[in-house]
Length: 244
Ligand code: COA
Image (cartoon, rainbow, N blue to C red):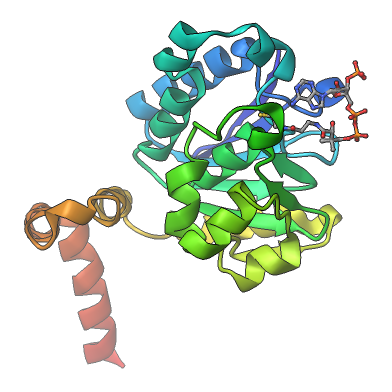
């Protein structure tokens, strides 16, 4: 890996975007390395913690590369396909956002299931200023996360969301001092890791399937009701009550 640092833990993978000289701008090499991370997480599901090196999450797609792309490259959805793949990873993903998350960097954070911010975090989508749209998810995911009105303030009005504002809007789960951001994110993941992995996986599919309710919910529950994990966990609860 040239653009990422990847740390494997038994229950989670920690990926750090690592092009600090370019403010972690997402270039083709980073896209391809993130696809490799996704492939591994699809094969062996684990939680994902995604963060950036050097006090920045990511300052966008690499503008040098964007400048050279034309219609056909745009239609390939280079960034949007990766971010969709990340959004569909089997187990929960959490972005720890320190500093700037702009353009494609913001869209990458929006594609994660949860976000924590340091108090220096700034989310923004300045793409129209470069003559393009935010085509890798912000035009629809952001509205889903914070509502269309605020999304239009960001996408059309150039509003930059500070950590405090993002927290108030529910875009980030919590705000921490930069030095505590990773520990706080790991603590959140520790809590998530206590749940049954298959239940987490199916919950994510159901939440992300708005057109399928209530049938998809019933199907997922039917699968989970037959798992030994469900029996063990419920027996543990009921036995604990009878014995207390
Ligand atoms: N793509 C490519 N390179 C980028 C980049 C991007 N999105 N963002 C920053 N860089 C590079 C700069 O070109 C600069 O390279 P250089 O040292 O070779 O000149 C280096 O990163 C540092 O950037 P700089 O602007 O000096 O850092 P800063 O800390 O003063 O400002 C930002 C940080 C994020 C505010 C500023 O870099 C910026 O506005 N970046 C572009 C944001 C953007 O429009 N993103 C949307 C892209 S779709």
